[in-house]
Length: 207
Image (tube, rainbow, N blue to C red; front, side, top):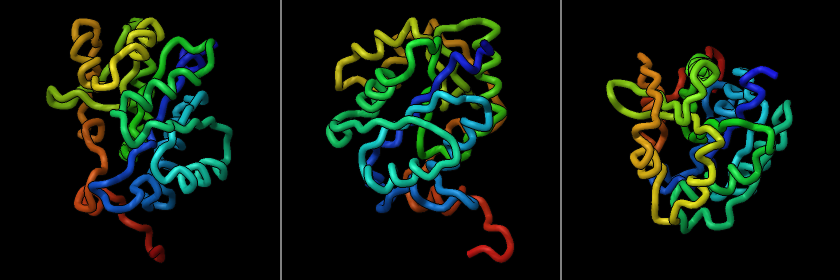
């Protein structure tokens, strides 16, 4: 079994898009939607165990997931409106298959995600079996990052008020940083300005 077959992904797609003012995961991104592009990139990079955690705009998001041309899983976080991102991660981790050794933590609003970065993260994990593999751009931690199953219990036990940043800080000495030369790992879509600045150009003849 290849290493990538032992790695799953939790895609955090439960937000309310308050700052965007519209369901950002469903915005066009080239010929796809934002969330669709994230999932397709994971799949094409060889990550086949994908668990998407839904919350806000549940019906629209799950309708998008149903028409993907390959099988993925999704689960709803009923506490999406109250909890931090950590609550969605807990829901996603609990639903990943038992045979997996590690999980990629992926933002649903990060369509700049690249196959190359995913491949590098998987390769680093395969080589070193690090507890945490985190991409770093100009000394800034980014996404997606990878967490070994040995730390899942601690993630699941984190108090609701804690954040993913808190978790990484608690385990700073365990982080294996993958230094990258692209800012895509530290970019996501929060505001209409972010979207207009980062969205890909439409091909000729497309509206």
